[in-house]
Image (cartoon, rainbow over all chains, first blue to last red; front, side, top):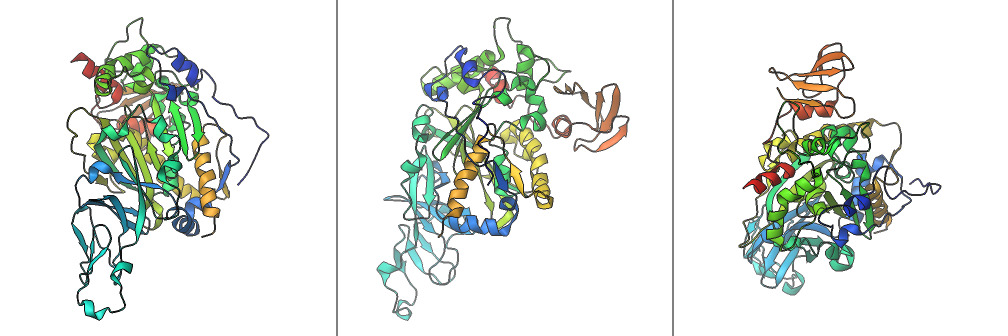
Length: 449
Length: 75
């Protein structure tokens, strides 16, 4: 890891700060968006080998994933006793199941000859191994062994399924394979307080798309942790996005970025008017009419916010601020979970694909507020490595944005594999979240087992 | 045909009926595929991501949150 302490961190980039911007909003931002907590961390350079080698992947498999809290599913995906999902992380497979006593997590392997007990999500009231029939209750206790007489040395009360810790927050279910891990509430720190007004537990899965990527999981994840890439990867957005005005904060295991919309990129050599800003936000073409004409006394931010405020306020029972309705507010829970505020709807999870360090799974959830009876959560829509994001029509315009990101990601992996330099470099401020991630990752992989 | 102006370079990107994108920048013109491949013309390089944005598979233009919000407001 490289270190350079000679520079003083700048808490925002050129142009207006995010705090100055929201101070002039029509409907004020909530207190949580007025918090500022930049942090300067020593990590500015990370070895390329962390993205390319089997050895580092194996370190993650032994020192990170078995030790850290990680999001496994939503509670709404397992509403009834016996409902379960199979959460796979690299070589590990965990059954997350609802029981009469609450949600439990068991390692998904028969204690007889090792067959995976469950191949898919579903609902069962016991786990029966399809190989020889060893059976466990869903609480993990042993229920039945065929030809019980033939295993005289097995004691029933010592033959329960190995379990993982389970914790919940905001309707999300987390697991931790380490029985000595700190409680989830300690691990999450400020996160529940930050999300108190957004109540993710009262949202539902409107869409869930998972795509196999030919890229190390960290390479994919890091493309969604900063707005620095917008200048090159999403140039159509620049008139209406304050990419370089984004604010980056860190609290414990949590990091946050807030990227304002309805304000121009400081990278532009001209100042777009409010109409041009809104046109960029709504993908207007030069040859087409505007989706809406901005009145002379309105701003792009206020216009966008006013359009969705009524619906949002009906759902939440409060007057939702301009910032919540217009800006991109994206948190990261180390190591791989990215909850956004609910009016963005987006939530991400990134993880290795099977036990392959050059492949990963990128998941996009749309988590939406609702009123009345809880809607049925959307099933996972899987996309192959070759498929286009627009094959998931439920993602709307975001699919095209992901296609732009996907033009880079496999090429980053190829470039890293070919690289002659031994390190990648992260910026002091705009790549704060990535530096924070590597700072924590380094702590995990440096620990002896 | 759908067209966009590049906010940084000022180049004009115009989708053609055959699916190619005509780019006019600094007085030079070139034709490109949506994946960034050069086809013909004096201009031999254009922005990969804007080519993909304009020439790649499209989605419902109203399916973004800023546009969606206004549709809801008009109801």
